[in-house]
Amino acid sequence: MHDIRTVDYRLKDGIGVSSALLLLSGSYGYLSDAGTPPGADPASYQARLQTLASFAATASTIYDQDPTTGLAKYEVAREQTSPIFDAL
Image (cartoon, rainbow, N blue to C red; front, side, top):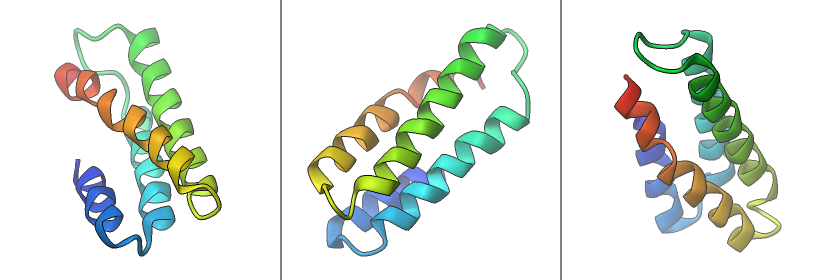
């Protein structure tokens, strides 16, 4: 996902991290709106996307005040994105 690469890049210089995280959150929402891919468990897939969107949005909100916690939330979302790609 392009937005993950963007967040990773922004983390290198610390500029625009919150904005990149907010865009990532929106991308999870777009994936959710697109529906569940064939063969994926709808409840699990949609729940994962909603959780990832929430983690990215929370990271965006808190990153500027607490970069360590914001980064931790992002790292969880980043790691848990792989099962979404596997389902696609």
